[in-house]
Image 1 (cartoon, rainbow over the protein chains, first blue to last red):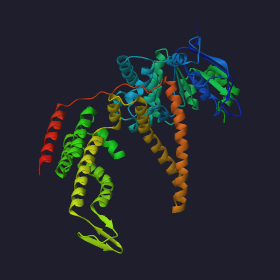
Image 2 (image 1 turned 60 degrees about the vertical axis):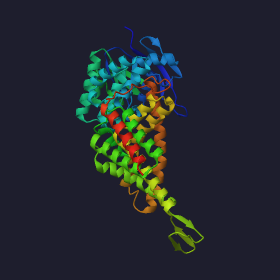
Image 3 (image 1 turned 180 degrees about the vertical axis):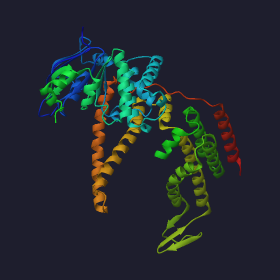
Image 4 (image 1 turned 45 degrees about the vertical axis):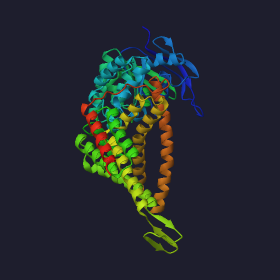
Amino acid sequence: MTALLELEQLHYRFPGGAEPALRGASLRLEAGRRVALLGRNGAGKSTLLLHANGLLRPSSGQVRVAGEPLVYTRRGLLAARRQVGLVFQNPDDQLFSASVAQDISFGPLNLGLDVAEARRRVAEAAALCEVHDLLDRPTHALSGGQKLRVALAGVLAMAPRVILADEVTSGLDPWMRRQVFAIFNRLIAQGVTVLLATHDLSVARQWADLVAVMEAGQVVAVAPSAEVFRDAELRRLIGADE
Amino acid sequence: MHIIDRYAYSNAIRELDPAQKGGLALIAMLFCLALDHPAVGLLTLVWMFALATLWAQVPARAFGRALLAEAPFLLLSLVGVALSVSLAPLVSPALQLGPFWIGSSAESLALATRLFTRALGCAAALNFLILTTPLLDLIELLRRLRVPETLIDLMSLTYRAIFVLLESLQRMATAQDARLGYAGPWRALRSAGLLGSQLFLDAYRRSQRLQMALESRGLAGPLRVLPLDYRRDRRARWFGAALAASLLLAGAWR
């Protein structure tokens, strides 16, 4: 079975950075998985996600989307981003329009869809994320949880097969968290893979079926959740031990 | 800003096509400027107040407050027109203040009145428009009028950024205040300066993250979004005709 998303031996150093941010990080994601990406601050989680979406280009290594190597041209990047969606940590960084409906429509229109199809996608994504009654509200009048769901809808409207979410559930109240995970679970049931970078060990233990652990720019382990929590060394790396 | 924005999104004619609301405001302003008659300006004020409060159900207080905020600018400019200051003695009713003579004349008073009523009418027309139409819809209207896309994108990003940065500003100011940053005028001045520079950095970093987020959703040149849907109201046309006719009549009055 070919993987939906493969990151192979990625190396990257931020311009002016003293240490490389990624040193040979590899990860392979198949369809319909729920994956938690753990690792302490600075381990390279966000950098890895930016590579998976083609926003950063590795100095060496390869990103493959549905078996095809990512080509860093406008067309190649658009093809990759159609399949791999990225939800940012702070929705205020992602929502650019004061209109909820217009913000969600941005991705579908960039895919070259016509207005009727884009409208359908907006309605569908808004219903899935339970923001359909917010469509004609101004973005700045929304609560944090509502903004996150709108940001999520903006990514889902592009119908990606992999959703990468960076720390999106931190700072949400339990009700809002359950709502966001309910959305994730609906997507996973449709065969979408969701990867959530998080510091929340209960998410990794209870929600994820696969846990990837990063340390110093490398993915040091990818294993079923239960295994990771049994392994003494991995427990130390994810901060599960006191 | 917040008050205007709140009513713009919650008034009774929020869903109305911005072209209709903009058209009414435009008719009012054109007649105010072209007829240049005190009665026209005052009648425009009455019209716009009535449309805003009765049709759009914006509270009279909100309309009044917006007008009051503009009044100082208007009055300041009037002083210069109505009064003349001279070193030589003035003939008409005048007041001597040291070496200066401050006086006025019937012509300058008439001019000031015309100017005042004209500006008042135009301000009222614009207030009607911004209190009933979210900026988003005005931008959409400009888009339909084929204003260059780059300008449209800049306007919509700026509008969104105002609220995002306002939130940052409030957070930072609270954090400074919590550490006694505003105890005493000198410390307050220093804190405000620091706040300004930090806000600039914050805006810069945000713009970079926004750029990344837009790229991840396939940014390609101008920001493409769906057009918004509006309701059209037959009455708007009648209002426009009645407005134009009554202003013309008022302008003919001697």
